[in-house]
Image (cartoon, rainbow, N blue to C red; front, side):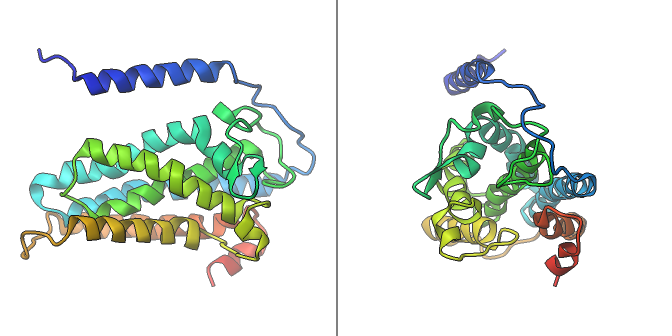
Length: 266
């Protein structure tokens, strides 16, 4: 039996240490007031959260069907691994960096919601006035997950899996979280300048697009000009899953079951 590589042991030790540190910050899930909580808004956001989550496996099918046969599994896992890695980062510090108490309008205080401290079933007057803050945090988590997964299409088949993991962590903490704070936090400096990003056009798609462009530019042209997709049905299946999830992606951003949902698709 082969011995585990040192880097995986180091990663495991770091994860255990972070989790032990997080235990000291744990709080009751009932933290916060329920005054103003709307049951219909909560029910709709639960559905929308599930729909957006559905987009990530859809993306893995979409990209997995496009690559060559030998790289199907690794390409699909690049999308799926984001579910675990980004969830952990978001739980520990990502949500705080994006939506914690603003520091000069540029970044959130990492201690505000560290390890989901003070994130419970109560509402938040500024972030989620009619739905539980915990539900809002999970809805935003799905956006944070799919953003780095979107980028994988630009360097599919051309990067090591461990390199992608490092890139994904750095992108989430250094690019996505600050940009989300600038644009979506009530005290973010772009928000105060009048920038309106209803459903991630800037935070998700522009950040992923520019990162993908930079990755493709650095890696350069592909060596083989002729390419045969591995599985066309996978591409069609992934497209359908993404299309279905998109309704939750857009309409869920209203954080309400009111008429704003209809306008979200216009």
